[in-house]
Image (cartoon, rainbow, N blue to C red; front, side, top):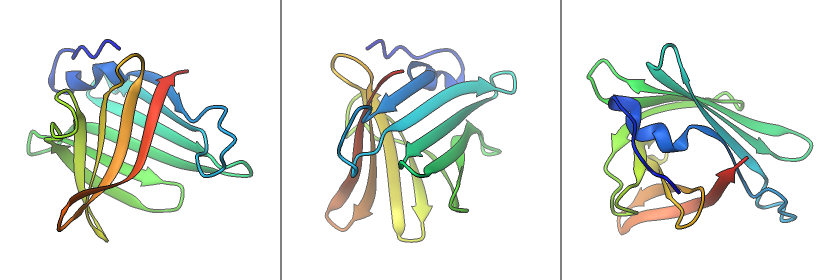
Length: 147
């Protein structure tokens, strides 16, 4: 996997650009197919991330914008098909992998983070974790491949 960063503040997301799928062909209903599409929008000032969780008879959708905040930090704004939304900031997630890219967000249940890092051969990993007294508790991990 070529995990080479691009130019500018949002250049760290260059390796993620395109359409990716996890759990394709999985017969395990607890692991539905998930598609993530990263695309530059608005003259490259933002990255649009659209996520579709294929739940068979319906889909769960997430529409996220990633960009530079008024504080000149990289942040995200996420809106989901269940009417929820969240926002957060780029965070140091190098404890997961030296090249990991991640965000932290304060959620109703506490601090959460999500991160991306390169798979050893192809694609990337994505995880979601919640902060506990003992550290980070992982509750989702996917391996994404190019679609």
